[in-house]
Image: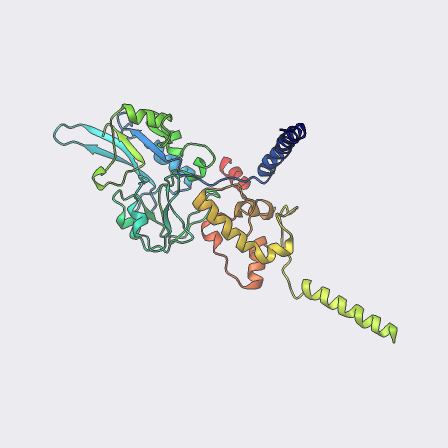
Length: 238
Length: 124
């Protein structure tokens, strides 16, 4: 090979390298300046593990925190929205009592999404089941399809909603896993408020997350696992 | 003759300038105002399109830092008197929408108030 050819190759290599070094930070800065944020991805699946042994009977701090975060009235009439409720269970034979919070179970195969005629009920890529209230016509099929009775219909006109949690008459709503907080990197309000830390929130798809590790080591169950919905909310000690 | 022509031309210009700004166009309370995310004329015509696109991205993909968010609009343009973009004939949203006779559905569900003001109210 002639000497000129080698020099030529070296020159090309160096100039390509220099060009890459010069352009790369610029592109990085461009993306940062334009705040290009990517949407949610299915690499994440949000879920919760609720430790029923730690959940104190009579305590409703999670419910109160949910109402405050999402601007719910907290009233309990049949026409008021409830996104999370405390349920008390008792085994009549043994007399064992159990208290647990019940809300939208954020199924992997949500029946509410299957039945929605306008595709308003949908599952986000990261597993959070939501209602797009812009598309919801208030038919309430999803409320009938949900095995967990998790959804509520807004009957009356509302005022003074939270800026991050728009809600309105004529649409169906339910637990959003505090999507406005999760998108900011925070935990849902109920998980944060629990005095006994019974609600563990995290990414089920990440094998190193605290929730995945715990699910691997302790026995947990899905409510109505027989339906094969693969819920994102799991209960320990049920 | 030349003078007459010039006068006519001047009158025409005045009339056309007047036509775009008069005819009882609402005088709006633009709140803090300042630098908008796009030119005013363009926003008058296209705000609904960018808002619709942004809302779908936010609801379905969780993108909450887009510049065309309704919350951003309200943050700058809510009146400094009542912290709201609706409720008065000169409110930022309601003023134009009344003039154009277009119903706004947004605020049946969305808050019309500046969020900073709501935080203050809560802490009182």
